[in-house]
Length: 210
Image (cartoon, rainbow, N blue to C red):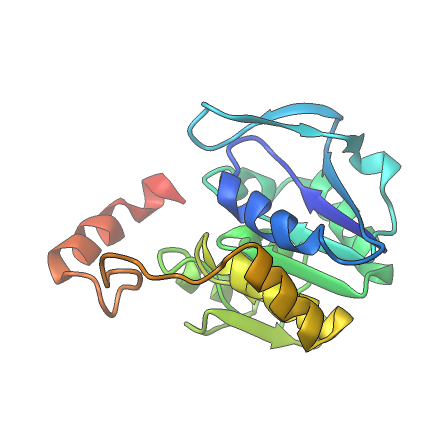
């Protein structure tokens, strides 16, 4: 089973690394990072480079596609080279997935039209532009399409997939070995829980961030 994680300039690191960390533990999995061209790709802060092992042209029929989000998604969602690759990969994939604003890239490729999907809360409303039905759920399954909300939710998505692909016992084992047991010191992880002034500030800046 081949799992392809898309990289592009100004992607969000955890969007890619979170699902990779869990899904790469799937028995028999081959996980590859792909980009327009093989080589280092910088994250959204410019302070971390991840290496794309292969170019898009070298990976045409992955079993699972993972598309991370990040500020760079706005450009990629209109990049026909990447969108064409997604359409080709999706034609034979078992699962096509995204994290955060990566769902906008899937939507830009026309893959989420008429489907329920989620995204980062600051980008959620943009899904309607592409005919998708936005929902604030953390992980959304619609057919073979799986979208996860903001950044950290990619880990939840990966656990869901592990359970479906390899069974509950494998998923529980991976959760245990990665000690994924969130106990955050603050309860501000969603716009429904965070202080109103903080939410309003970031809503006002959303166009600059995602």
